[in-house]
Each structure stands twice: as C-alpha cells, then as structure tokens.
Image (tube, rainbow, N blue to C red; front, side, top):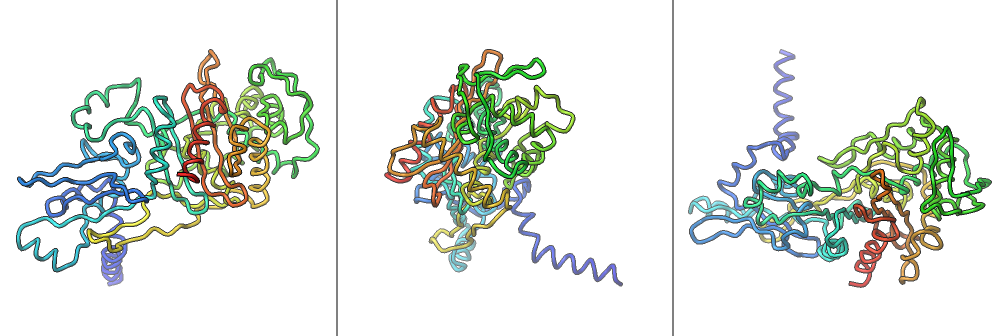
Length: 451
C-alpha cells in the first residue's frame, strides 16, 4: 500500500511540477511534433528587433528567416539540420501558443495553426552590431553583459555563418576544420587566458598574504628558475615595482615570482573558487581547465601564474569572473531570455535576475577593481581613458605557438563606481591586448553610452 501511494504521489508531482521541465528539455525531440499545430514563434532583441521569424506562404509552406543574417548566428542559432543557440534553448516556448483561447479554438476548428509565442532576448541589437563590426574579419569572440543582473547583451563569434543558407552550406560548414564556423567561440572556445589570468594570481596572493602592501620586485626583463626563463613582453625592463605597478604594467616576471611563492595547490584552490574545472551556470558551455596541484614543477607554475601553461578558458567564463569583480564579488546567474509573450504581446513568462554564487568577498572584489582601474589609468589599457566614462580592466597576450604569436585579450567594465557593462574580448592572433581587444572594448562602451 505504501509503495502504491508513493507511486501515485510521484505521478501527481511529476505531472504538476516536473513535466514541463522534461518537455522543455532541448534533448526532447517530441517538441518538434508541436510544429504540426503551431507556427514557430519569433525571437526578438531587447530593443525590439526581429532576430528570427517564420514566414508562412499562401500554399502553407513555412520558412524560418533571420533578418540579421550572420550577426546573431551563434547566439540565436539555427533551426535547420538540428538546432543550436536560442533556437534550441527556447524550442519549447517557440512551439507553444498562448494565444487567446477562443482564437485557438477557432484555428483548430478551421484546421489552421496557432501562432507560437515570441521569445524576447536580453540581446541588444545596437551592441551586437557594434561588437560584430568592431571584430571585423578577424577570428575571435565578444561577450557583453550586465554585472548587476546577469543579462547577456551581446555575444559574437567569428568565423560565422548565415543561418538563412545553412541547409545549402551544411556540408561545407561541417567539414571545414580550418574555420570551425559553427563553433560558438564565446561559450565553447578554449584559449590560454594570458595576462587576464593575473586576476586569479592576484586574488590568490591577497588571500595568502592578506594585503598587497609591502610587495616589492625588481624586474630586469626576465626571470629564470629551474633552468626555465620567462620574459616580459618584448623584454621590457620594468624596474622596481610594487604590486599595483606590476599589475598595471602586466609584468610577467613579477607574477611568475608570485606564482612560485604561492605554489600549485594554492593557485588551484583559488582558480576553482572562480569556477575553473567546474560546471558553469549555463547550459551546453565548456568547462575551463586548470591543471596545477601540489606536485606541479616550478616551470609550469611560473607559466600558469601568468596565464600560460595548460590553463584553458572561454571568453564567457572570463566575463563571469569579471562580472563578479564588478558586482562586489557576487556572480549573478547569466541569462539570454528576458521574457516570453504571446502573439498579442501579453506576458507569458519573465526571467527575474538571481544571484548564482559569491565568488569572492566584497573587499577582494574592490581591491581587484582598484588594480583593474589602474590598468586603464596608467597601465596597458590607457586607450580607454578620457572617454567621458570611467573604465577598469585587464589586458592579455596569450601565446599559442612556438613563434610567440599571441591572442589579444581584454576583460573589463565601464562606470567604475556603479558598473554598467562588462566585456570579455579575444582576437585570435591579434597580438597584445592593447593592440586589438582594447579598441573593440572602447567601441562597445561608446555605443552603450552614446548610440
């Protein structure tokens, strides 16, 4: 009797509470059967632009159309040859209809389809177009988000594709290993973080020592330990430095020195506090990897402390870390869907901002923010100073081959006292962070305030 009652209780619970979660899973292929009676709904930007819609022709045939072509390719995704992006994540909502019930009854009586609900995204068409154009014909990715809410305002990845032509181009796209155009580099790219990782090393140093004060290092352009040499960029000799100047000038020698003092176990603990080797609070996004431990050798520790070694991270993950810094240590749960409305604009569902996890204390976040502001004020990102708003950030040059070629990184935020927008930018083979990534950040911040 107890087993029977338990089964009945679970059936009631499943149908009343959990069933929609299972129906809504992007892995549930039964969702597509809803298209027999529902016209797939629209996807819109937060500023009212149509990003995906279904055209219905006189003969009853339907065509999914993407007015912005390549610009939102990875974020919005596609609905041909499978699904990706928001077309996958919001598949259930797009194939559900909350039209007025009398209209639904009339359409069913006449054998017509009901119109699916509209998904309103957090994406800003203004910022997305700005980021897309700023990246130009270079490979890389851009993420822009609100640190106080977790709303993702822009997500660009290149090389890209035209979702309007996906069926025609499919064979080429899936076989083109040189470009990997279908890969969303913003969320699934795996890159050495370069000097943006010095945020992690700096946090670990503060947790170990309790202060940045009193640190002193004489940079002579290179440092050698256990027959392994690390050089500052172009062999620059920074001279006598405290912690703040070492961070602002992105001194590799100083941070390699710190890394050997901290050790592999300590750096690993702090990295994992910042979600390395952990599942990110997003669906279908790669974990970032960090391999140091207590048995790691000195050369690997030196390399890892400056963002090289075996460490790999996605631009989205770096955006999340930067958002926590900008938001007083608290990471808000990132999201792409703002609301769902029916075909008459009436609300069906609304996403509320929510805290995901505290990654660091408020004091730690404020100290990292001070270091990042120095980078803009007198360090490697001075290109962002004097623009009518304050900014903070960290540049990075992540070497990826034996010739010293490097990816260009920048992570940062604008309006330092009350941060408005976080960006995470990587330009593949772009050189230093100040050369390629910082100018892109400037264009995005300018568009946020002035367009």
